[in-house]
Image (cartoon, rainbow over the protein chains, first blue to last red):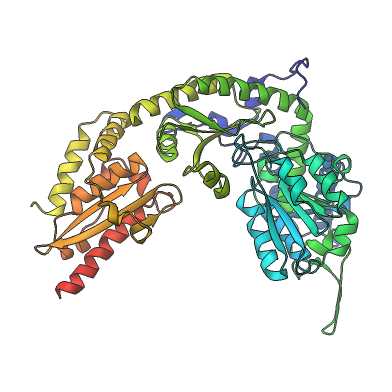
Length: 412
Length: 141
């Protein structure tokens, strides 16, 4: 992922011109957008794809015999193939388009309610977002399965020694994020998948935070389910991706009933459509799906190796500068991190720092980042989180550092 | 004690002297530091107002038919705004507090902190001040 000898073949100032929002001012200051882990900004080509859809071929898909419907269907299915290729899935019907990562996780959790039995064990990591905890708690309540937690260490990494201890033949499912949203830690998912498979457990990887920085290969990973959100990879909100191995998707029952997902309906019996439509009840986010394909094309044209290399430079630069601020503590200090820095300064509340930075036009995230168990682990109310993207610059980091220093001066 | 709207006008006057947001916020932070703190016995979950990010605790006592508020927050800017609200509302009769509005917060340039979608607990805090006033009013009647 990080090839240090590689030359960066892109000019960030040219890239920035692709993102109209980066020209705007906030509170009279040029916007510095460091909340990329929450949502990424949208390049002009994606905005144009959305406008083009509604201007030229807005129609419902998979049903109409008319030309508009056919064009929309073709574009939507072409987007699915782009997603398939991006994740290197064997078949396009292993890609289910959902409304987001949370929807994807709930779809799988709901399916496993029909499979799990009382006493089965499911394992969730201590580094998860609430959306990769709560659906599994609900699943365990429904089935009588036991929810176990894979603990974390002070450095913000998963405790792999503990993993070896909790793994048993009762383990049926493992849920881990590829990258922690609160800390940026890249988890050793290859190892986790291998060990889980050794005892016959299935693995779902939440890739919401990884996909902006890493191009996952689901075949090489041999992962059972991989989920992500379009709005973190330069795509629109309201679109999620679920990759599932064909055999698993065939085995899981449908999530929602409705149009699109049926084969035959009588009042006595309904037979379901084949994959992927079995899991895509109702009219999908057609425009969003098409725009997601364009977003992936955009990011792939830059190249994920280039993106990872450049963002890592930003991460190292910002980390070094931040550590120069007295009393500043970074949470999550793994060697394997994406461009996310979670920190606090002394006993200053993260909300206060975030408020002052906003006044300076700098957007960061503050709070518990929907990962309260991590904050409880460190016994803090939350952190300030700065997360960088390939369209951010070192100059922005300099302004951000000055902003943090100014906030600390005001608040101490 | 001057009526609530008079106190609010005084606060607007004070804030009008500041030239930029920095000075306003520095003043607010100072106010936050000088907030009459809530007695530790009330800093419990029974008195907490949960915002998503900063926590607020508030308590009210009735003395000589006037309500006196004390409060605290774990974030200093939130504390500053609480200090302004308490200065305006504390020491007044329940009816005055029920009738009072909070438009002066807009006028001193802090409107964004009172947006219902801002996760700092302040909107709920104002509601709580009013609820205390309604509860004491019921007692008086």
